Image (tube, rainbow, N blue to C red):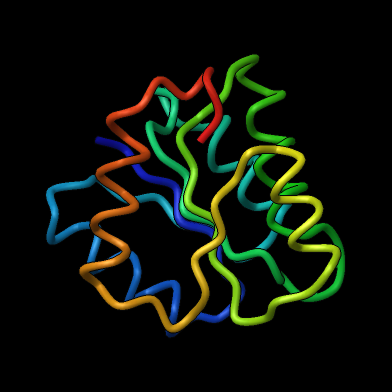
Length: 127
């Protein structure tokens, strides 16, 4: 399974990538919205799951990244949205798109359960 992991924090990006790799995923990573779109489009196959941090610093947020990648491929992709901050905008935007937010730090067993649930479900029917 090909997973695209997007986080602007290099330590979190590495830790999340290593954890998903230990579950048998092939991993591609990005630290910015622009890089995420470029990496996703450059793959020979569609990412089968997105693991995206909400707050990517200045510029587009994680939901913008998800929208951009899904628009590029013309379909929904199972997604895990991670955040260390809660806020009204995050709650509203994620709820509008049917995204479940996992708040950092996310215990590995909770991330695994959310990963399994997201990748078992038909992504066209919300996440």
